[in-house]
Image 1 (spheres, helix red, strand yellow):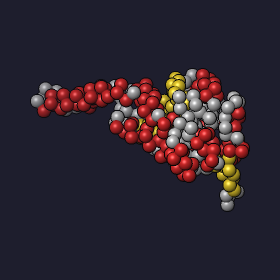
Image 2 (cartoon, one colour):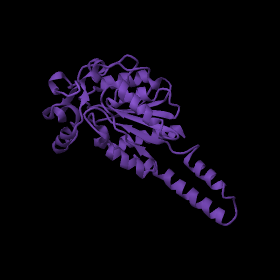
Image 3 (cartoon, rainbow, N blue to C red):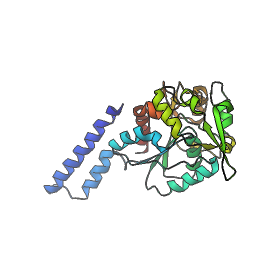
Image 4 (cartoon, rainbow, N blue to C red):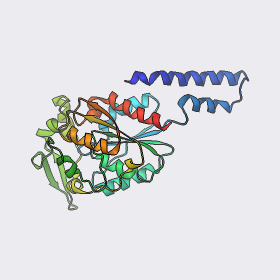
Length: 277
């Protein structure tokens, strides 16, 4: 899928070289180089891609996607997701987004879908939302409610380990023995075991915290749905995508399609990015 974008990149390079030669020869003024550059890229600069991880993960889950986007010339940011609660996590991301100049493509995985849906509200720089095996909540929705609305999720109380912390918050982990079956059923046993060992917990209270007004009501969205997802059933993802009017790409993947199929996820993100130009 990456090959579809490469001819455009070569065209950009040729446009820049041609403009530089013309300036050196005195055929066009130097100011026209920037115009030639903008025209080569489309109607404006490439957006910054901001990737938001979900629960039981960290920013490294995006590594395969990051390298591909950077190779195609995108600036990529991967801010940490605190995983403490919908309102607080969204406020943190909203503040972060205010520091990002220019257009933004905002991408969320899993619970990160809750966070981007709320954080992007009112930010006119966010031009596209991309959901990856993610929740696309409407106002009042909770993670627990959406997970159980359709049958098939293996994220049950028995699959979680609860650990009280010193500040009174109870953290929820996926039990290592069930991690692969729930989240990583298309990854090797060794890779799943590594991901289980480094998972970051989510505050258990976040699972029942309602979402606010959704940014997707005013921002175009794209959705990558893993049809072999054992955490968030594909039927639930399809329901949410239809409700949000998202452009959908379905793939035979687990809940971690950005790890097992990073090229597909990259392609969808770049499709959304082209929409912003």
